[in-house]
Amino acid sequence: MKHRLQLLAALVVCAAAPRADAQEPSPKAPTAWRVGTPIVTYYAGPPMSEAVARQMAEGGFNVVWCNEKDLDLLQRHGLRAMLHDGLLSPATLDSAEQRKNLDALVKRVSKHPALYSYYIIDEPGAAAFRGLGKLLAYLRERDPGRMAYINLFPTYANNEQLGTKGDTVSAYREYLKQYIEIVKPQLISYDHYQFLEHAVFPESQGDSTQYFLNLSLIRQASQGAGVPFLNIMQACSWAPHVRVPVPNEMRYLVYSTLAYGAEGISYYVYSAAGHKGGMRNEDGSPTLIYEAVKPLNREFVAIATELQTLRSQAIYHTVMQEPGCQPLPAQAPVRPEEPPAKDNKRGLLLGYFGKQDLPTHVMVVNLDYRAEATTTIVGPAELERFDAATRQWSSVNGTRAKLRLPPGGGQLLRVVRAAPP
Image 1 (tube, helix red, strand yellow):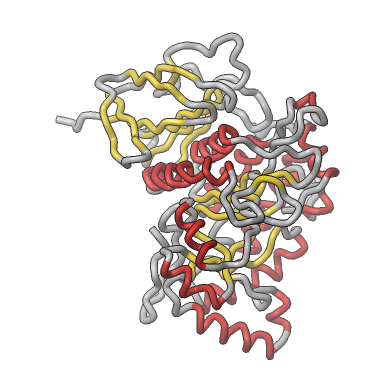
Image 2: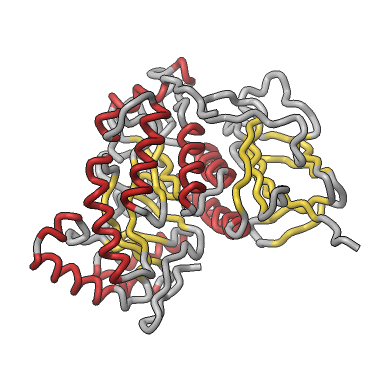
């Protein structure tokens, strides 16, 4: 999570492109963990209190960090708990006494309806996977209704950190492969921070050139393993060469993550010493970023809920050609009516979803986080658009949907096919 200059400098190096709530388990018949309401959480935050819990709930966060003593507080605010405890470590299993203490902890907290997940570790290398796999199996046996949370490195971690060999894509794919096979996670979480200072990284205009590469590789691994994924997104600066994102950039991160089929988002950070931005000032007041993500969090939950029963079928870019970006086929069933403007350097992102071979839903995202975009999307049958604020669908009265997308914003459409006679 705490990437420093040597990692961030690697962001400008292009890699080869690759070709609701938590269900309360019954004490009589515990069930396997499911995402439930799509996850909105954060990495690093203040100690829990009545004021902090209220602020998080009002901001649309629904999974928050806590200690055992905070569970009742979170339940009162309708929040799901990610439990932090020193016993939640592979080293605990090496001691009979510590195992006994862990068993006692799980027995106590597993009865609490606010508990959603156990926090385990941030950014482990492949050498740690065997121990983590044993711990997750141990916890799953004792509390199958809760997820054990681990966050992974991004693509710009080096081979020594990943514990694998090869170029960027090969090493990262092997890292994900070993993680899935050995640890057997219930959720794949990773972080990628792309907003750098333009003056320091002018060749990439201040943006990571691996953001979509990372999303693409995680999406592929998630689908292959049959488990959901979560993207931790940048919401702060922690060094002079890293910029604090602005509201339009936060919208871009949320909507691009949605288009790739994520069931969770997280922000780095909520608040932490030495970090600028985030969600909370030192005096406890909300930041501009908090106010920006407050509606975005609810939009994410609404749209991700609509997509939750569908499969992400394809991801295409109309303009961008960075690693991980696949060009939009000319015969895409739902596509922009007009070609991109010649001066448009980022274009649109289209994420296709459906239960069968043909997509029924399309997430259209404006990848320009500096300017509004207008486009007309055409489909093979009548189209409807989704209002994330009201969670209602409405007809566009035909096969053409005229969209006006805010900077970094998106729109979910669906194809309405007539029933066969």
